[in-house]
Image (tube, rainbow, N blue to C red):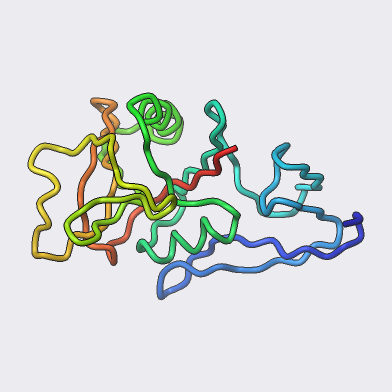
Amino acid sequence: MDSKSCVVVIALVAVSSGLQLQTFHNTTVVIEAGFPGTHRGVNVNLSSTPYLPLVRYNNILYYFGTILPGNKEQVDLFCNYHNMKLVSIQSAEESENLIAGLEAFFQSSEVVLFWTSGRRHDNFWRWDSTGRPIHYTNWEKGEPNNSGGTENCLQLRFNTISKTLQWNDCACDASSYFICESRD
């Protein structure tokens, strides 16, 4: 692909009905992997092009979707469009890396919710991004409780005061921020 090729770049924008993917065309952009940076052979002029700021921990790139929340389906589409997946947490070390990344975004005293790729299937939890069962867990006390019989998606609850990242089951149509990942 040469530098004169036209590539469509997207951004997440707010509309009255919620989140919407917005396309932008830029003839000076070359993106081989779907997002800018130094990952996977990217050559890009970002002076006027929206892009995803990524954070790297070991072999994983993260995007912290902290601007606009969406339901599970909306944010899953957003991550997939950027050649990423909703986050799956395989270990306590990964959880600690996410806490370190989230601390940079939230300095006030609050609890912030984030979507993951975790989902309940026939009373078993698995990561939809990998299709694998969830082995490492960090459920908040009393969770998962499937309150109302509709809590089939896994949210992260980041507490900015205690610096903890605990898990909660939630209805998939709730609105939350999100974390996308790309594993090398």
